[in-house]
Image 1 (spheres, rainbow, N blue to C red):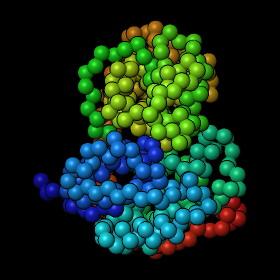
Image 2 (image 1 turned 90 degrees about the vertical axis):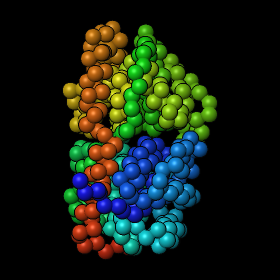
Image 3 (image 1 turned 180 degrees about the horizontal axis):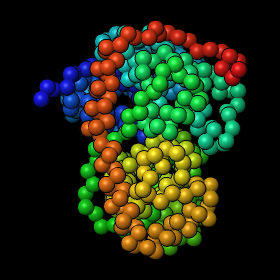
Image 4 (image 1 turned 180 degrees about the vertical axis):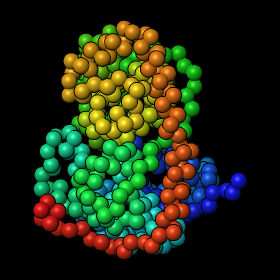
Length: 379
């Protein structure tokens, strides 16, 4: 069999949430395929446990910057500094492809084809969570996103449903490709406990963990939630959120351990472009209770129980049923594990490498495309 071609990949990521898990896993898997990956981190620096082990991955280099994340810098104040910093890194690395897990940086004059991966965006978040468009203060951000998608040589979404959402919000000049996220975690046999688990940033209304907290006191099983309590939370202290036992921000190893012990994993999210925590919980053998939203239906239909995430009565009723019906719960645990096999890390890495190679064979789109004005965007 012919070995896959090696590539020098410059990948921009952040360390705030699931994008870090995606990027670190993908970068490691690409290196296993013979690539050399420079993983450039913007935004808050990764915690020590997040980079633990990456230094042992042959061909993987991690560079941490203090550049602002675009959703933390909606007016683009850090745009020029980011351009100078990242293009200097690119000049040194000489990548064959630039893989961006963000949007506005695609407008830079990169020396290689550019791929943008749409993990989320403020505009689609606002529509899903608040059922309205963002205020005008976010117009500049939206213009940057639109310009980045248009400047990219290709873009990817992690689900068909989220690709549709991006198309509706920004009308990119090219049709995005769908590459499902994957995980390489191996589920160890574990004795399941009478525990309900949730995960996500507790301060992010998209995760809707308040909806779970509202019903936790009615349930005979304890409910635990792992994640940052507030944007500045370092995860060092366990917090309490009503009847939910808030575990704080866990290391990935500790999170997987919690998933392997929990019998039920619940995600009542109002907005979830993919949901890596759901995938990891499924791989860990949890029965899934999920919000009935398009992305989660696409991935887990037939392998989970779905409920209206805004209906607290329905959430409580569904959890009560899963608690009381052991046969139903065990069947869902098996179904989730089986479905999770579709979303493998090796498959994701192979799909991205194939896309990198395809980008080499097409002409690169002109870069340094500055965004339209806010007024032009909203018009």
